[in-house]
Image (tube, rainbow, N blue to C red; front, side):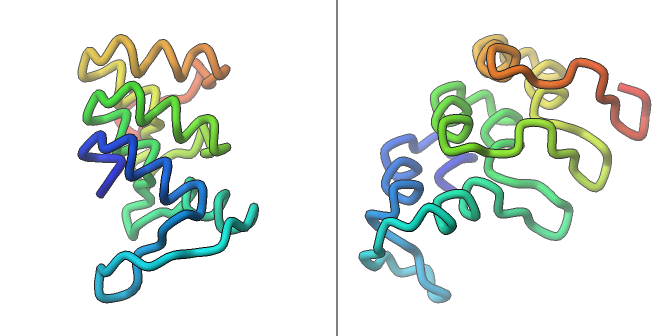
Length: 115
């Protein structure tokens, strides 16, 4: 939710391990663990959307940068074959796309529709 809403402050707290969200959606304190840090940046739903795809699709450039700093998988493709760069570019989110390109997003990736 923090990525899609562009709440960079909350995203940073979650990625730093300062807070966690339990199954009921309540915030708790959490230890800072490298494995958990990486896992959160690369948590995917059933459609294989992750925080990076969500932030890029919504045009939240600072959230994209934060997730890239947390080692989000830049070239991960959703079930439809779209990457974060494809989402940002197709919606005209220039700053989000710039962050992805600066982090070496793969320009050759296409979605299932050939986009």
